[in-house]
Length: 227
Image (cartoon, rainbow, N blue to C red; front, side, top):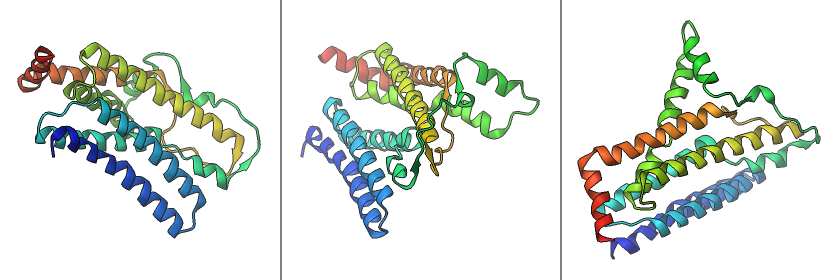
C-alpha cells in the first residue's frame, strides 16, 4: 500500500474514539457521555478527514509524523475546546444568561504583566503562560511540513484564527453555563486576548523550526521546486 493511501488509516483514530466513547456510555447508561462522545467524535472525524485530504506524505517516516500530528490535534481539542454538550442533559434550564466579565480580558498584555509582577508568580500561572507560548507551535510546524499550506505567513495566520476560534468557543461555554443550574464550567475556561497573542507567537516558533532546521527547510523548499 502506498503512503498516499496509507494516510487514510488515520481515520481509525476518530472512529475508535467515537466507538469507544459510545461503548462506555452505553455500558454505564450515561446519556450525557453518549452525547459528548458523538459530538466530539464527529468533530474530530471531520478535522482528521480534512487534514488527510490536504496533507502530502512522502514516505513511512511521514506516516509516523502524521500520526503524531493527528494525536496532537486530539490532545489539543481535549485541553481547550472539548464540547461537553451532553452535560446540558443533566442540568436545569434557567434562562439567566449573562456574560462573566471576570473571565474576560480584552486588554493586551494585562494577564502577562500581572503574572510576572507578582512577588512570587505561582507555578500554574507560569506554566500557563509558557504553555500558551508553545501550544500551537506543532500546528504551524506540521501545516508546513505536510504542505497543507505553502508559506509560513499563511501558517501563522491559520494559527491566529485557530486561537481566536478557541477563545470564542470558551467565551460561548462560559456564557452558556450561566443559563443552566447544576452545570459546571470546564476547568481553565476563559477568554483572554493575551492567549491569542501568545498562541500566535507559538505559531511563529513552529515556522522558525521549519526554516532554521536544515532537514526541514530542505524538505519544504524541495517540494516547492517540484511543484
